[in-house]
Length: 336
Image (spheres, rainbow, N blue to C red):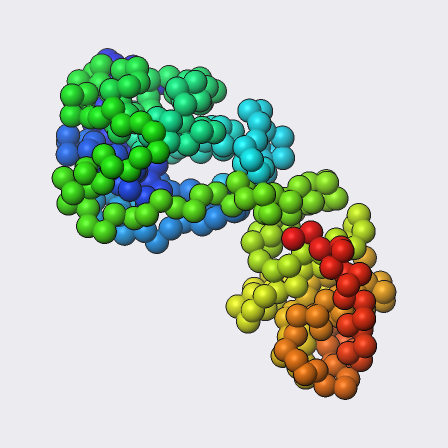
């Protein structure tokens, strides 16, 4: 890894599209550093259009990096634990910085830039967290955090004289007062509001994630991607039902429809699609149909027609609305 003697004027910045990373890139770029910005697309979120726009305004190149399936191993068994949900914040940051390190080496850059603010996030932005992340990634002294630089050890690019530490700041905590002042200073109009945060921090979403880990040890990536939509019901250890919430989610289920699952589509009534994952027995199909009727537009026809697609076959089945009688039982099976 580069030391003070062989550093260069090129860096890779982790750009989320939020105000913090926007400011960090602007501060370092004005000191004559060539910057390549990267943004991570995870299973539980995606690249923000804001990040692309910010990169364009700042005049830096922009690359989206997708996390691989091994990212799920960090979520399932984090080395440094969870927050209030199933958010392995330190492990997640380590994963991202390890990926950024590889990108940095390929790009011929010599250090990384992060918009992290000391003590802003309790799970990953304490001094000891920064030290843990740098040690695990073998990036000691190579992550520059300009917003809090004056509260942190001097980095290698500062030692090498590539950047002036006096032009950085000592921001800490959750207050945005200083950040908003800096936004005006750097001409950032309509600074973005703080993001809602990672979905993994949500206790409700965490229940769905834990359900997959618990019941599907040989999970597939799509089983986590689908957690972002619909209502989820656990029928038994091998079987669950996903009920869409709107037309857009209907289309999503049709496009996804993984091999080995059964898709149920309403035909003569306005209702959601259902995805049956696991045992597609007649009883479970009826339960899936009952879930669909529970969340369908009323009144329902005397006989409801539903098309089932799965295992290379398509068939039409007909159900009476009396299936709604089982709805209370199904509610008890609801994960979230």
